Length: 89
Image 1 (tube, rainbow, N blue to C red):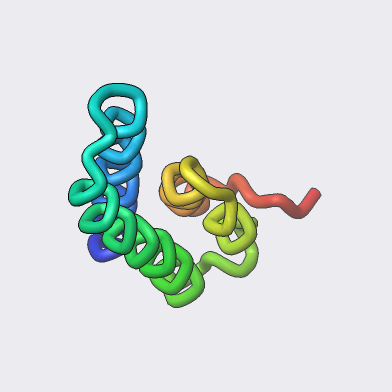
Image 2: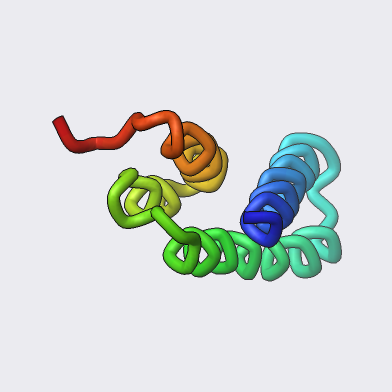
């Protein structure tokens, strides 16, 4: 779970850097450095979510695939899962 939280933080921060760079000065060096970092963090979020215990029954796995906010949604869903909140009726 800790690795997932770190990956989510890196993904969110790198997305913020990319968007700020896009709307301000658009330095290509920043895009070429942070872009692959963001992509790797996105893939790490998906992998960590799939490997997290209890992620199958909570719906966290498919939430991790949502770009930009999926990691945050997956962490929230996994955190709430022990309280009995699942997708099943």
